Every structure is written in structure tokens, then in C-alpha cells.
Image (cartoon, rainbow over all chains, first blue to last red; front, side, top):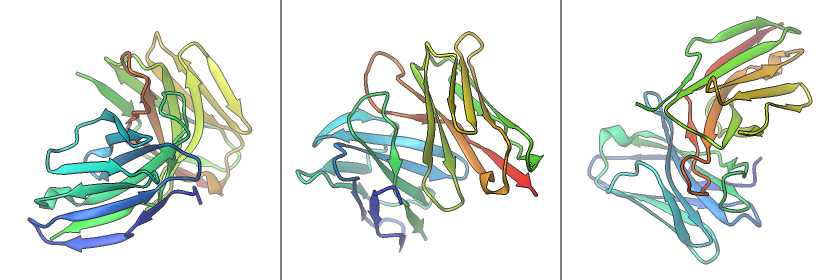
Length: 114
Length: 115
């Protein structure tokens, strides 16, 4: 158990809908990351937050947005869902924002868009 | 174009042997390289981190090398066990001048250790 929690575990929804994925980092970690993993694209970095502020951005679609709240939990919002958004979404956390930190991954949310 | 390549074919070895996994990258200049283990349906688990000025790092039965000239990292598991069977991901970090935790992952290599 990494100490990172993600809810829900599974999510099934229809195209065009909007969903929110939630992540609680390990106690004491200030940085949160979101990744998307699909069979064809592998594990792709979406976005990083550090202590409530956006720190780095990957190839995150405009339909996707995220935020980190004062209690350090984070939410990833996915809207106007398409079939291709079906994937495993992982949250990870680390102590600080920098490059030399190991990241602790949560168990993931499996999103299925029908 | 930028690429990270790991052996796409599964690596099958006998218990007790040394497994060697390769990570090659093109048109990146990472300051750090990390290795993670991922079991089916679960999140990746951190194994080792190596800096660009380090040639080799060890942790118990694991060893990683980092050759910035060849743009390659090798990951070794000695005295392999069936419990080592998993997918192993390499990840580049410290790209460009920004100090962020952004990781760029390879596709992973699946290792199968047979008893």
C-alpha cells in the first residue's frame, strides 16, 4: 500500500458526460501528479501540482482540468468524454516538487466510456 | 523525434539467473532516470533512481546503469525469482531546465521468471 488513495476504483459512463476523479496523497507529500495509462499510449504524464499550484503540464487535453485543494487532495475533471478517454488514471504523490523525488502511485481509477 | 524504447517483447528467464532490461532514449537529455515495477492492474512502484553523473546504482538484488553517451540505461535483477515477474518501466526526469517531477515513461518490458 503506497498511502495514496484514489476514488472511485471503477467508473463507467457514456460519451459526452463529465466525471471527477479524486486523489488523496500520502501524508506529508505536497506534490500530486496525474497520469493516464492506455494500452496504445502507455503511461502518460498529464499534470503536476505542488502545494496548490500548478507546477508542470504534459499533453493534457483542454477537456481535462485538475486542481489541488488546501488540504492537498486533488481532483481531475474529464468532460465531453470520448471513447478514446477510456483508460487507467493514476495519481501519484511525492514529498516535494523537484526532479529527484520518487513518486508513490495510487491504485488507479479505471474509466470506461461507452 | 523523441523516443524512449524498452524491449517490447517479454523477457523469459529461469529462476536464479540475472535478468537484464534495456532502456534507450533519443533526443532527450534527462538529468535523472528512474525505474518502476508495475503488476497487472496496479500502480507503478518505485525501485531505483540514478543521476546523470552516476554510472551505477545498486539496491539489494537490483542494479541500474546510466550511460548518457549511449543514451541508455540497463536494469539488472540478479538471482531472479518468480516473484520478480512483472512489467518494468523506465522513466526520464529532469528534462530541460525546469525542476519539476514530470516523468516520461517507456512502454515497459514484461519479465517472466520461470521456476
